[in-house]
Image 1 (cartoon, rainbow, N blue to C red):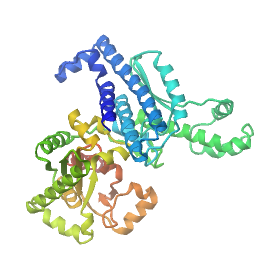
Image 2 (image 1 turned 90 degrees about the horizontal axis):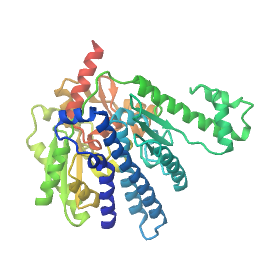
Image 3 (image 1 turned 30 degrees about the horizontal axis):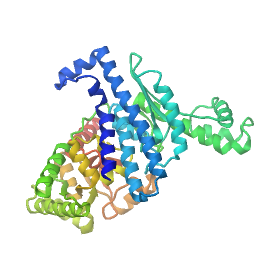
Length: 456
């Protein structure tokens, strides 16, 4: 693991420091914005970033191939390292998409990151490298290396024009694919077009299934491009109409708190904290990962007990309300922050958490262990404090929602989900609090403001 950790640290530097090593960036925000407005300086900076991206992407593919061929590494360790490497690619993709998390969420169709054969990845990498040779003002990323881009083969950003463009590129090779692509060009990328493929005499019967799959992919890409361009459309995963709010929420994170807890745990062995009265944190440190985990859980218990002994005004009433319908063991749902981030798609990858690199590497190697718990009573209390009409649903309402949207999309407590003004809060909403390290209070305030504006 120590050898992998050294390699991983080099990858992080290559992925996220190459641009700033190419040019010296001002530290003050105003000076930085002025610096990046200069076309010449921006070109130099982007050139450094994209060169670093390319080197890291090629290196990650080589590492993945080496791991696949290495019989000495246990399968669970291979899976762990693979997800860590893919999160570096996620970090690059997030930067390509200008950190627009609402774009990122539209690119994911699956609950888990699909595995892709190495020969397919190698073929896509060759195509990406050919595109990247055209200009350092562009970068093509192999989508299958990411955990959340499920709708294309390449994600390409191009800064050569007056306005940066983002493209989702499909790679189709072979005589059959070329024939099908030609036939499918006459169809509009809409769901109703799928039925027309059945009666298309130009498509041999044995290729109908493949044709529908290719058309469905075109439909998904079209839906995503519509959302990126207009902020409304059809979600390709849920197949439901969506509309994004006009105002962009600048999320506040608790990165600095987590970083401070990591530093404290390195000194004292344990550290505990609380975010907005509803997320409790515990961090443990030890040279032995199992000991670090045990210490983190002890610290989390301490954080919860301290909160219950000194509750905010009105919290006890909400706690009794929740305890009457939610089992005691579900009042606090515990999350391993690193593991949750690695298996979650999409989210802000842990490589982009605002914590010191040394602390991140300690979390990756298991010397630091961080756990969090969502306090459902505290969350309801916080929502009501900002003015939201928020409560637990009935079991029947939660069951119906799970049937409509899939149980993985509907978190429950005692078989009940959380309702805000008759709308249900889904898994992606809560994911941001543990995977993106977003503070709940600003999110709930923005939700209340948005609902008030729509109602008026």
